[in-house]
Amino acid sequence: FPVTIGAIISTGIGALVVALGLVINYFMEMSDAADKAAEATKKLNEETKRYADEGLKAEAAYLERTQKLEIAKAKNKGATEKQIFDIEQQYRQLKINSLQRHYNEIKGADAKAADDTLNQIKSLQTEIQIAKLDFDTAHQKKKEEKKQVEKVESEQLKKARESAETLMLQQIERNNVS
Image (cartoon, rainbow, N blue to C red; front, side, top):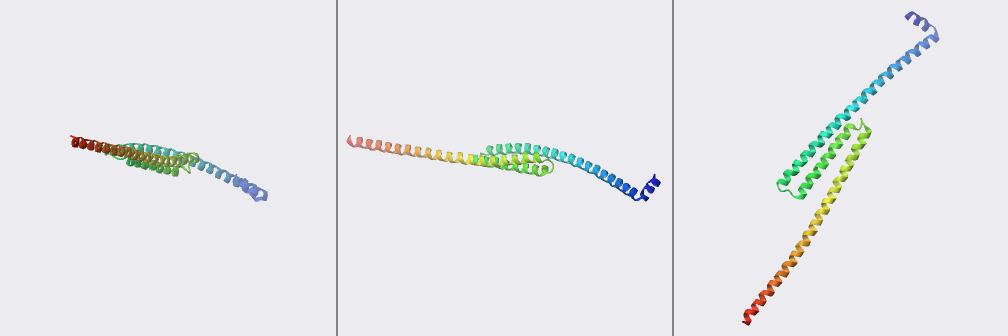
């Protein structure tokens, strides 16, 4: 066979045909290598996402347990509503940080999952803002209610003093008349 190839190459057209065959063979080998690399990359991306998802799930469960424990401890120590609210806000931010790590791990592996993670981050950011507004509104309402109660108590105390003064004056008048 090598003698035949040598004879074909010795003619100009034969050399061109052999060179063309070698080029085609080279491109086919490169195509096979590219396909194998693409398949390996796909598998790597799938594994990356799977491990990132498992990590996120474990971290979320840990944060949930830790938050509940920290709130229980704070309540046990007599924490204020503000202190408990601050703990809740801190854990919301920790969840965002966890989601951001997850996003960074999967953004190159799964674009749709990365977009879903970004939406979860935005949702939690909105939740933080809403919780803050709700807390501030409730706190302001409690302040106003406390002022109203204090005003009513003050008016009742003033009336009680006036009634006591009136009774004392009436008692003095009776003692003076007798």
